[in-house]
Image (cartoon, rainbow, N blue to C red; front, top):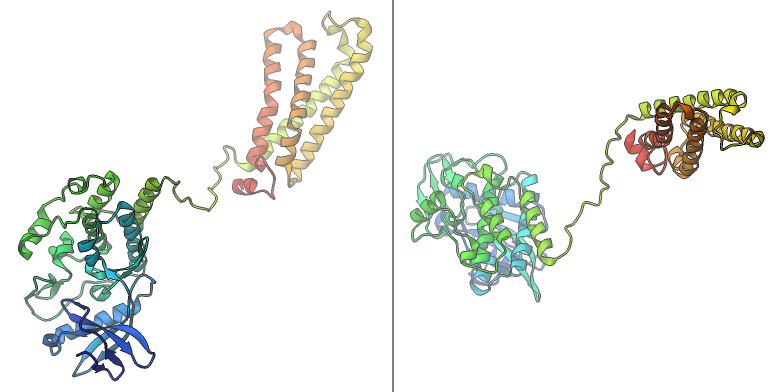
Length: 456
């Protein structure tokens, strides 16, 4: 076989580098492009089996339709009377199965590999592809000196898009090595050791079957064992359907309990109880990775939506304008009332001091009225930076309003408790106005500010 030219273009360079239920994989050279490829040829015993050839052709079509940097893509398909093979991009590295036999994975390595696989599955699922035969043999690791590097998922040939593959012909096959079992009209497709309970029951598989398989791979990387593997395919099937996996800590005492929770959630018998998407699984793996590294979780860079203001903008503007009008009315009354009733001032202000007190009080009232008129116009014409302006002048407004309240207290001190209540109300009004302005414009700006825009 070595040195043989396939399809007039691909020269076999090495003995088989892999074998599965449907085909044999060789390393070959593309003589036209002078590059290394992986050539998967249908097994000789299936070359004249129309059912296998149809499935093999479907594998080529599906594998060519998936484009993702972590998925090995088919680049050619040759189908003739004498031969049938698929050409894949060649992936340098070792299979996860080989690493499982030679290497004890750290938690950091498990999470790194798991996140990359979950991310790849999430992308494939979003495009409508379900792998259905995810296992360590189909995961290639491109190793770096400091641990696993890039991950490639191989053999999407058993993938499906919308419906479970219908064979249309009667066939009964069992292969203990690969676990491929078929029956009349419907196929249980995949490796028994990594099948989900619904696949075993010949129910339609969805994305949660891949999540189950990934959970089993995470469990096996953490413990070194597949908890459902039996001596025979029938015992493996019984274990998958009936047994729950032991805690990871039974085999790996240093594994964090969060990893055990994640893996066991993936392995629940009812798919509704598993992670409902690969993206959800990836999020939990990334969260655990961040916790173990002692760094904060990655946060969404998008700004958080501003909370809804307690008062609608239009209502806030209307109430603020109404308060300004009320102040102007009170200032007008005080302006007319104070000169004629200055004798009502308490005894600690001597009559000879009334002469300067009244002009000062009227001047303050005029200044306050000017400020109220300005606010009235600014809000009425929707001044762009009203929020920022009010924030800056608020201390002065507070002093003015406290002074005005003091005038009322001095003039009507004889009313006692009623005067005190009015004083409290007048002092409270500036804070009410501030709330209304911030609801309408935001605390740091007006129409030009993000705060105000979020309120409108």
